[in-house]
Structure formats: structure tokens, C-alpha cells
Length: 121
Image 1 (cartoon, helix red, strand yellow):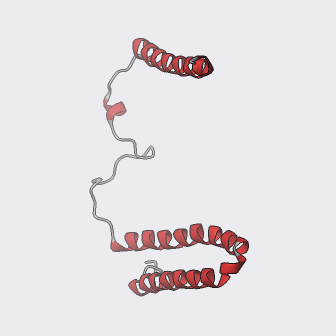
Image 2 (spheres, rainbow, N blue to C red; image 1 turned 45 degrees about the horizontal axis):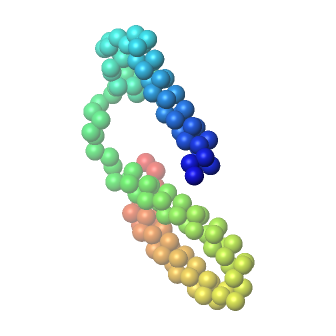
Image 3 (cartoon, helix red, strand yellow; image 1 turned 90 degrees about the vertical axis):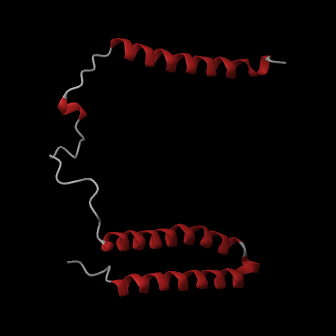
């Protein structure tokens, strides 16, 4: 009864033993020395400028919202196009669904436009 699962169990046992062995060997043979350079936060090779808890401008969040809106649009339109092609009898419902979706996106686009996200200073 256990014979068909024996290769899988052996593989799992080998993987677990290998992971434990690699961690143990690296812990035993490592020469980790804590120096001020090693424990300092890494900032692209540049010295740290300012505090990490600075306040971001609202414009940053508007640009992020703009990216999310159009990213969702792209991700949603590709499966919609495939479904539209395959479901010919429901084409009218799918067109209405996409029209409502585009209207919602247009409202978000106008909101971001009025808030000045397209004006770079």
C-alpha cells in the first residue's frame, strides 16, 4: 500500500535532510563578524540621506493610483477579449460590461487629471 508513495517520500526526506545539512554546515563554518559597515543599512552604495520616515507628497500617491488604474485595465482587458471571441452569443452583455468598466476608469482618469498628477514640477 505504501509502495507507490515510496519514491515521493524518499525525495521529500532527501530534500529535508539536504536543507538541514546545508544550514548546519554553513552555520558551523561561517566566519561572521559584526562590523559597523555590515550592520549599517544599505542604500544603493550611497550614504544615508535623511530619515526613513519622511512624509511623501500627495503627488506620489496620485501617480501610484494612476499606475494601478491602468494596470488593472490592461490585466482585465486581455481575458475579456479572449472571452468575447469565444462567447459569441453573449457578445452584447460583454460589450455592456466593458463599457461600464471603461466609464469607471474614465472617472478615475479625470479625477487624477483634475488633481494635477500629470503636471510635473
